[in-house]
Length: 314
Image 1: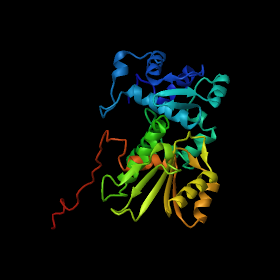
Image 2 (image 1 turned 45 degrees about the vertical axis):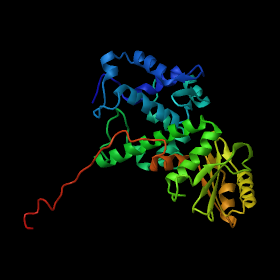
Image 3 (image 1 turned 90 degrees about the vertical axis):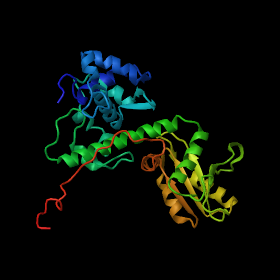
Image 4 (image 1 turned 180 degrees about the horizontal axis):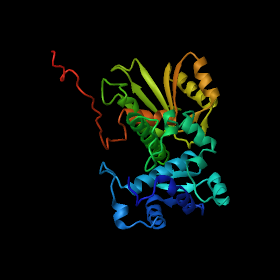
């Protein structure tokens, strides 16, 4: 294990401290400041992970950032730009000598993420694995550690996708949801079977997917590009249902970058027409699954013994 670059928990306190002024800070600037805090040489900063795909230093800053964000101590205002939260400021006022996973465990958001109960959660197994420079958990097999690591990487990718979407224009998001439906196979009879509606007069409908050449079966879409804290409530879904009535439609998909209230979720279960609700986390997961806006960075193959080959009795 690399000893020159400290483990990811070391960087939690200096990273949060650099954000203490409440201003927005670019990740590239933070790299420079944190390298000085850790007294890293150019050789230390340039060391690569075994995969050769990323610097060890950047990787560990990345995990420190992820853990602090999951605890609600910092936030990403846009891709690669971060700001401290009120909880983060409160923690710094207590003059901690260090911040580590035990520190973060006192925050409910972090607990929910670790236990797999948050909207932005991943595998519950993650509460047993320290990543990016921590000592491996001997209670987990190498396969379990790898799967848990993969789940956290997917969670971080989901966060980045949602940050980019929230920073995009409403028009881009409307086109994105149409592209996603097509990528999932809806309207597969033609590449032109889906389209975003005219922005100036969409009547509450942001996109249309024709599932057959004659347009006998049509899916109508609505896209709401909200911040994570903005919840889509029942009135929004009722308005969309009314827009479907104006089209004499029976099927609709409502996609948001935030989440839906319990009343909204209950409402779609009680009405006759079929309205599917896709929240921000589901949206990001679907984009990853159907390779929309993402690309493969690395591929690892895990191989087993081919017992048939070694069977001499055949």
